[in-house]
Length: 225
Image 1 (cartoon, rainbow, N blue to C red):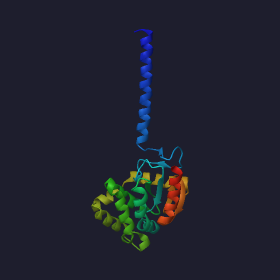
Image 2: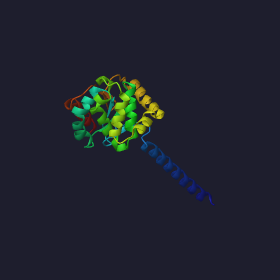
Image 3: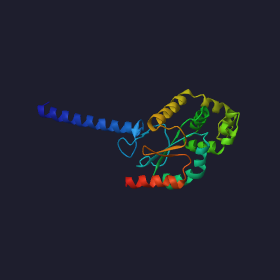
Image 4: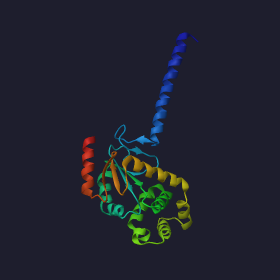
């Protein structure tokens, strides 16, 4: 092999290696593990591969709701605002919505673990079921048999009582839930639900009306055009 041929072969190897590095980097980011949001570098939030989300993941506007299944105020937002918000912003691809559970009590973790045992496309419908049926399982409504109430709702969603118990006993999920809780407290100083984070900034707590929420969303969308 001549010196010229050796140099050409070496150059080709460098190009292939460089291309492989780019491909690997793209592959890592596509998993969603620890990646920043679509709005650019350091947007003030991190998307997780375990996030439960709706909408267009490429949207430049990301809304994170930290809520608790046993929270009556969260249930009020779900009943009065969420559907209108979803239709206007999520279904149209304008906003990428993420729901993260922030425990107010251990019952919230149990409810979340049941929701995550269901098929992926059933998660949000079960969260909705929990909100709309809080009087069946939530201690704030005087319920004394919380476990029985959760089993009842789990069976409504298609799980057996044994399956519900196995979901609740999942220790690996406890670790994930605790990490979400810790990050919410340290990054956003969250201490109540629901709390809404828009592109890394807290925009409000409580049962925001559609008008209140849309005002913030429209302003952020205008900035991203």
